[in-house]
Image 1 (cartoon, rainbow, N blue to C red):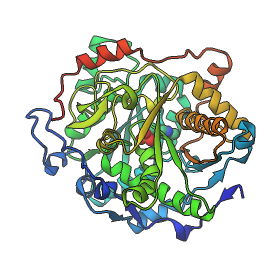
Image 2 (cartoon, protein in one colour):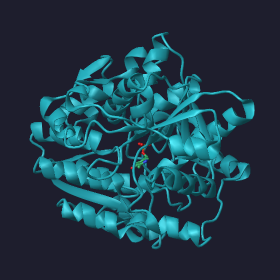
Image 3 (cartoon, rainbow, N blue to C red):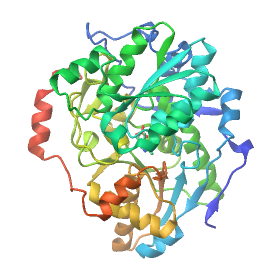
Image 4 (spheres, helix red, strand yellow):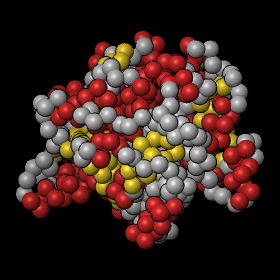
Length: 452
Ligand SMILES: *Cc1c(COP(=O)(O)O)cnc(C)c1O
């Protein structure tokens, strides 16, 4: 069979919280000023209570509210495919499967958490949600979700993406959001960056600073993050739990689970429900996070406390990072241009429970085009990183003459990223990797606390 489909009744009723099963829990977040562990109430200006509780919860299973699950039925369950054409093209004994999240209204996995976050904000009487967006995927997912709950949505979009991806902006506006090119002159944080560099292309870190500042200074407004935080990773596990059922339908089990890595949410979404079996000592699995060579925080970064944003307003989180001041090169995989990783993911990397691999931009587009020609779907440039890793693993199987089962996350389609494909076809993409010297320099500049 080529396609494994579930029905509405198979959509999970609970999210899976991997914190309950981790052998070593992440260190606590620290207050940016005092450097002491923060208490949950310090997050109250930014997030609704229910999400703060999820952020620190050690419960293994957390119920999905009926209303959220009902909205999930608009596009869930999503399909899982066996990539038979790709297997043939690669002449590999490996079996390759992929979970496809591009069927959601905004075209990626992001609405899985956007809908949940909008729901909890609405329940607690919030009127407006601010956020940042890189490639525009998160902003469009949250705009869609806010529209469903009649919430105002204000999006700070990284300037380079705002210019490269006008259609994402129009999607957000169609769903009723207000969109600004960040850095803006609407916030203290944005004005500070503009004073230093009026032509700043922006970064996710800068846009986060702007969105947080708006929420922190307005009692009717809360902030929402599309990745990195524990509750975001939690909500995404709906997709991996479906994939577990679908692999069972296929009569198979992945030896290797692969997902692209920006801040960790789609990786967690797919990998954690499989990793559960490993942590419970039942079935082994290798999980690989695929990141850009131009932003290699997992493969080349340091494990220490760092800020989530550029200006240093967020709590300090224990993470693999290239430093919060790092502005990645303007590669086309906008969603992967983030300096750090979530606390859970970072601890799992540190404990060698999961692995990471970096790919150059050209290599990822080679993989994306090969995939599109074999399987038909045009992948998001972010998703192409997972495809590049999957192809590497499938080729290794061919060389070794072994058959392994590989599952990767096709976390979004690339219909709004065709400019990137155009640049690739015209030979305009530069191979770009950070040199070891550049990385040493970046790391030497980090002045946040070390992890004891
Ligand atoms: C946002 C995004 C990513 C990166 O974010 P994660 O939290 O690491 O998943 C990757 N792929 C797509 C399609 C995205 O929209």
